[in-house]
Amino acid sequence: MGCVSFSRSAIPPGISLLRRVRGKHFSFDGYRSSVLVLTFIAYMLYHASRKPASIVKDVLQSDDQGLHNHLLPLLHSDHRSHGCGNSISCPSIHDVQPSEDRKASQTFDKDRSISVNHPTILFMREEASFYADDSTQIMSFSEKNGTLAAISPATEDAAHFRGPPGFAAVPLRGWMPFNSSAGTALLGEVDVAFLASYAIGMYFAGHLGDRLCNRWFLTVGMIGSGICVLLFGMAYWWNIHWLGYFLIVQIIAGFFQATGWPSVVTVVARWFGKRKRGLVMGIWNAHTSVGNILGSLVCSAMLMYGWGWAFILPGISIAIGGFLIFMFLVVDPEIVGFSSPHEGSERGSVKPSHSLEDQTVDSEQGLKSEPLLSNGEDSDSSSDAVGFLRAWTIPGVAPFALCLFFTKLVAYTFLYWLPFYIRHTEIQGRYLSDSTSGNLSTIFDVGGVFGGILAGHLSDRMRARAITAASFMYLSIPALLIYNLFGSLSLWLNIILMFVVGMFVNGPYALITTAVSADLGTHKSLKGNSKALATVTAIIDGTGSVGAAVGPLLTGYISQSGWKSVFYMLMISALFAGLLLSKLVIAEVRDLMSRAKARSGVTR
Image 1: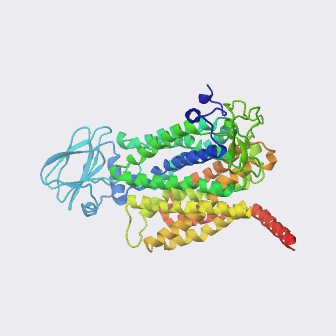
Image 2: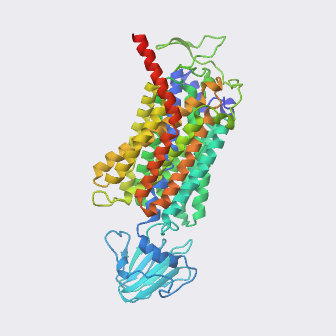
Image 3: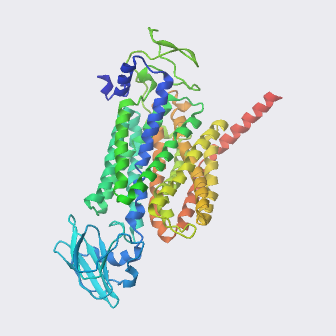
């Protein structure tokens, strides 16, 4: 049955059902609009499902670093000990007094027994003893100002302990193993586990995307991504503290997420000609920022219930999105009886037929035929897919791919670390909460929406993709410097500067990954072969994704010496991104000058 076939030319089952219910076929514009909406939703959900990992960073890593450095050796010890010992520098009891910001603290006025299911700090103002059952690990030591103890619950059961009147219990912030002095570096390693597998998977995804049905490919990728997102969040309820678990889940998630971008760009490019492609794809590419914004808002709102909840809704949503793609996405005009839009045209023409019974009048084109009753099984092109190495030789692919390496390095550093940076930066004399920091970080993506549309529009008007991309990257350098220097002066100034940075950073990122990739995938050197789209898209975005992996990883280590060093790294990366397009920029400048001379000659 064609509608459930693995063939790339099979009609989606949802479309077949709608056509039967409707009693007639849809127009070319109707199909094309559905493709834009469905691919927008699909990649919006891809990006929304990536946000939880960045939003929960501060919750996992914790603020109580000085205290953790003292207590974690105790919590990780395999035996019970009493007393400080020479190997541990004891914190003062004054450093761990209950305060108003420790909302989860409990003070008990009489001898009683309580249970906890997270690492917990216990303390008394005088010498005291704490008792625990055999399944609970309890470490304590005494000093003249009181007694401090660290409780480590059993793997599966809560810790049960008894203390004297007047003791206080404060849950240890963070989540092992990330709540240590090396926490930021470990979080960076988790990021790079995802991004490295994403980058590697991107190259394979492009190769497969030109050979398999993009609808099936997206469906499997979205459902698999949803499962991985849920598995990461389930560590909260399963009480998993093994770093390897988080690394494995993120590696698998990276491969599933790699199915998305080559597929959606390929599908959209098949439905649109080159005219106004930059503007159309600039608007369409807002899915990246919209996904980031929705993901940030949803995850930030769920933090109050526990960090694991931040992963649940994004994971379920992308899995449901995969089902919608399977049911309704028409990956090629030929599947429903239209030819692909040719060079310079925005509409596909109806395929030749011996029957004219389905012809209708189109208000914009005059006489136009609806697609014929065919499942399109014979519509596959006979041309062979372009090989990986051959795609690298297409003019413009290599410089744009290398440019995107540094562009995504900057963009993904913000994607994964901006909420954490805001949380740990004093803005107008105060530090923002985790949820507020996550919400505020969405301004960067709002700027990215405007930047993507502006870059696409300018590149269409000038017919100069390289000039536009390079100019935006050069302008991002002073924007980054000003944001780092003055963003902490006031909240409104921070918002304005963050918007500007997002516009200049995400503008070329959106342009290169959409219009540029589609242009190069249908380059004239391919002589009309459309089976290079996914491969070229994967090469460009895959190379960019290597940079996306490097940026967050380096940030995890560099940030330990101060965020100013991180911003220097980002500014240098933006400079390299612009310089790598220099040869193409020069060629486009010459082309602009020749066109200007030609116009002036005609005017005379």
